[in-house]
Amino acid sequence: MDLLVVGGSGFLGQEVTRQARLAGDRVVATFHSHALPIAGVDWRALDIRRRDDVAALVDETRPAVVINVAFRQTDWAATADGGMHVAAAAAAVGARLVYVSSDAVFSGAAVRYDETCSPDPTTPYGAAKAAAETAIKGLDPTAIIARTSLIIGDGGSPHEKVVHALASGAKTGALFTDDVRCPVHVTDLASALSELARSSYCGIQHVAGADAVSRYELGVLIARRDGLDETVLPTGRRANTGLPGPVDVRLDCAKTQSRLTTRLRGARTFLAPASG
Ligand SMILES: NC(=O)c1ccc[n+]([C@@H]2O[C@H](COP(=O)([O-])OP(=O)(O)OC[C@H]3O[C@@H](n4cnc5c(N)ncnc54)[C@H](OP(=O)(O)O)[C@@H]3O)[C@@H](O)[C@H]2O)c1
Image (tube, rainbow, N blue to C red; front, side, top):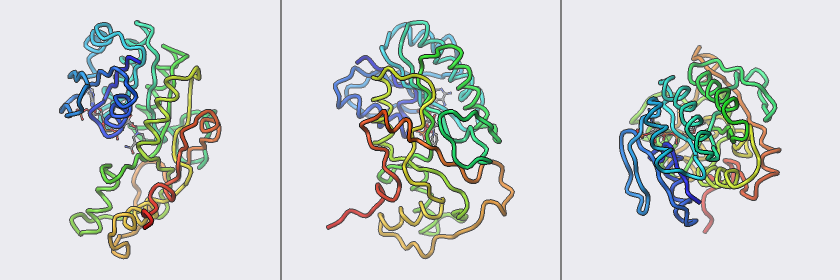
């Protein structure tokens, strides 16, 4: 498969790129501020805010599939306009598009959300992802829009780094006991995206982990896996902070999971300490 990974230098993009190379795909991957030393990948600098640059790259490389994982949380133009630019460019060459969205499109008012639920974002980031979703649906109704939740790895994600910094005292703060998500392992997510790219499904898919856990429980699970002292992890309640954004958002992934051979493991499973 000829694949273009937009945002290949990011945490999820690296894993999508790595798995695609292992599968023997020809991979072009983009970076914005730094390329990565993944062998056999054609790295291209790209700013997805620049519509003409996106169109030119896609026109030149002519991928069969585009997986877009690029975003910048505080940059509407990168997240919303950029998502639209990539979709327009993919549609122009007839490439299949897989766009990664977020549970941040939901307010948390309903707590549990399946693929039929409409976005009701409460933050600029959630609104930008929802705007990109709408643009993509309009430009290409056959595109996959894969909403996910906190992405965890084997030590490399920002969420894991925060737990280590809190445990060592390098950082102050709190892990909220009321802030609930469905974390997913980055290898499961990348594998699911690849499956969806190769499928004939279209539209919204929910691709998160099977367990709903609080940020605090997630921290404890990471601490146990990594041999950290879980008793020093500071706790708090998000509801008491006045921080904007959803508190409890659980993606119901049953429908999408039924379409996949990749198992979307829950955090209690993929963070369980290795036995022996
Ligand atoms: N991380 C999570 O817990 C989480 C949760 C829910 C949904 N998501 C979604 O999952 C996707 C991947 O997240 P991630 O954690 O892997 O993100 P990440 O590590 O922050 O990577 C973001 C990628 O976007 C690129 N990028 C940023 N601004 C750009 C621009 N203007 N033009 C082109 N590329 C740009 C970055 O390039 P450089 O690094 O080279 O600058 C990087 O490759 C995102 O769509 C995000 O909304 C993530």
